Length: 306
Image (tube, rainbow, N blue to C red):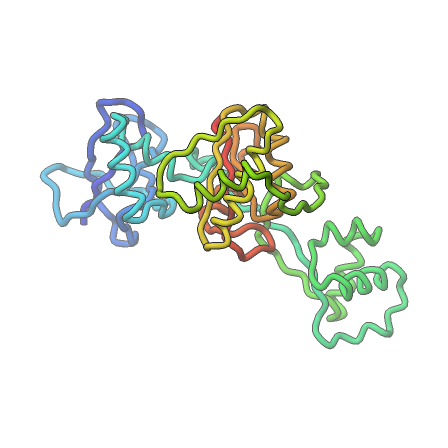
């Protein structure tokens, strides 16, 4: 089996397909990101599999290993369209479909793991004498399961107490994947939709009842444009759809973020260049899976173009 591979490069001369052999121990499919030997480079190179065929007229090197599957049929078709529409290398378009922080396979961002603790069902906790262990048990009775780090902080205990409780069969410790949350330190009060003015109602109904097209909201600062956006998005989410907001300047991000968080809570996801690699990776994954932490609803996706 031969894989048709696009090399991850912005060089115009490399904007073409290269053939690579598929080792018998690798289950390669179209859309995969793979590591391949290329030219005289000592290090392996990232490539994207865009096709498979039975044979090649060239003497081919073999794929080294599979990195991950990143492109389904729709995304692959989209990258080809983008490449032709905007005259960019196919590899450059494919980069947009890859999670942030994973282009360098040597030190790629990984999922964050954290220890969580929960009470063992029907555990007999009445005989506990140790005060620290009692505080942990009481916390878990009120909160079910929680990260060990948070329980330690709230109960003023150490990991030693958890190990003792686990040894006695009273609690269960397990490692879970958690999101890096860029909103951790924000304390934002939940807000409700505001009563609209006559002019705002007219704008809102015109857009909701209108056809799919472009609209321009014009108004001075403080005239209520953002509230119109918020209520439009609320309607879109109620219909089971998603919304993307593009903000032209990164300095506007904090104040806009606060407005959307106060209205929509943890279904908001955000991407911009001032997040850490790990935060961008997790926000990207939340958007892709349409889930946010502790929330099974569809995500509202908020992007900053900066």
